[in-house]
Image (tube, rainbow, N blue to C red; front, side, top):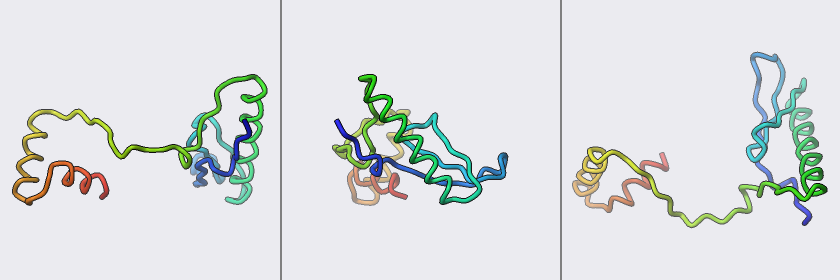
Length: 109
């Protein structure tokens, strides 16, 4: 299977501790790359991800699927304390909306 490394979720941030730019990949949380510029940090993390993906594929190991290509149902179960459930149900009823709509609105904030 050939995987397009461009579809992974990359981010560059400043590392105050290292005094350099830090390249990260969400799907590979143990990987990072430090560089003087944001562009170099992004290029570095992309290169190391490509190496790791190639190594995993060569060894027949599972390769993380990019978050961008995953399908999401739009449903997930959240357990909350009964008193919170009651408070949210009251809030939804008072607003004239469903509990699902209220929860979705709160999560979207």
